[in-house]
Image (cartoon, rainbow, N blue to C red; front, side):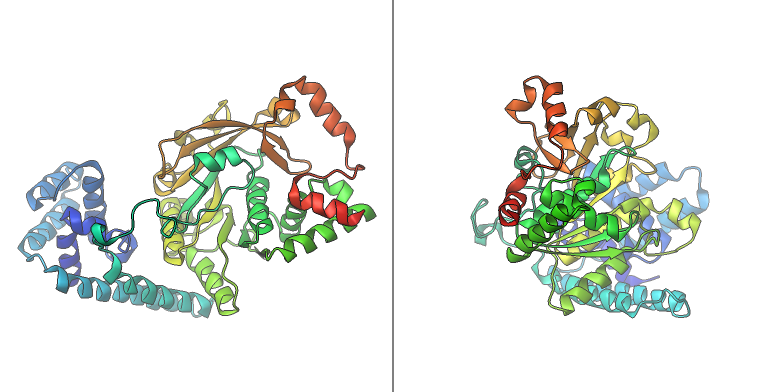
Amino acid sequence: MDNTNLIVLRALLQRSHWYALEPLINIETFKSSEYRDLYKIIESMHVNGGGDINPEVLAAEVESMFRNNADKKQSLLDMIVLIDETPLTAEAQLLPMVRRFIQRSMSYSIAEYVTNNVEQTSFDPNVVADLAARAVDVSGKVDTTIVDIFAERLSGDVNVRPVRVGLGFSPKLDASLCGGIGPGELGFYLAGTAVGKSSILCKSGASFVAAGGTVLHITLEINARKVIERYDQSWTGKKISYLETAPGQALAFTTRQIVKSKGGTVKIVDWSYMKPTANDVGALFRKLQAQGITPGLIIIDYLKLMSPNKGDGRREYRHGFTAVGEEARALARNLDVPILTAWQANREGMKKDLIGLDDTSESHDICTIADIVVSLNANKLMQDHCRMKVQILKQRESPDRSLFELYCDMDSLTVRDIQQKDHVDEIRSILETKAGGDDTAAVRGDVSAEAADAAD
């Protein structure tokens, strides 16, 4: 029996230690199924209850959950007896113990990855380097997890406000999200088929780049060429058919130069249909860092197409969606960078006017893991009229669950809040917009307006 695991689990029974260590320790830190089962139960009891957890109460919970699995129940009950017999470690000694525990856990992950992949063509030493760097980063944070509130700056102090990244196409939506998505957070768009998840992700990325940010855009479905086209569409407000003409080429070139002059850049990685892991993404991020490039936003299109860090077979992939979500969120926290992605709605959800949290395909757990969930809703009639309804389904900053109607022309990737003029004879307004086509010099957005002036 591993005494270090027992010491950590004993500490996690105390609510104060749970909240201090929870940002550092997750289910993947434990290497055996029994330890993981106990961790999940402890996590659930802290989320749903209050105060410290008594070992007797923990044992009663195990009795209830595994009444039909005698072997598992007895194994966990025996472990709880050992946890109860393990003395509570003093805080001064606990933190160094946790540091070693995390470092050893990640060292096991390195050894496991090398053992399972060193003979494979997909073996990437950058993944090993990323795991080693994470071991140093995470263990180095142990000493700073518990702070004295009275020694800290006041909430709202300009020097301690997190720099949040707006989603980039609706100021009203960003305001309701208290500025957008923050460092270390996982957010995703939830939508049905052919609503525009990939396009909206590109729109968010293009907005961040246009403001001078650096985006790492990982495409797992559409190829890199299509991603590039959608960034150009976002910056110019033009259809692809126009951008393929000589004037369109000139406009796109000028627009790119303007974005570049603002300091923005986007690095696009085409891993379409490759099903990478969170470790692969982390290795890529650190590789860019070594080159002097630190992305301020990671976009993954889309999360369901990733594989869990452990296992690469079909069975593991089908049943590993929760692990994929947990690992993506852990990656965001370890890198201290927001990750924006998407998830598919199920068939029942696609029949509804408004998609809800219960309408995620494959795994509802993904909603409990994410920090921000925004649904994209547009039936055929709405799409014909360039409309989309966007609703905040989850966020941690506020109870705001507002619903917004947007003008959304996917042909030109023009997405914005509904304006007053849009309510005046809606159909005529849409038809006039379409009739204007792409042969006019007017383009949408600050960047595209500058490009139009420069092109003239």
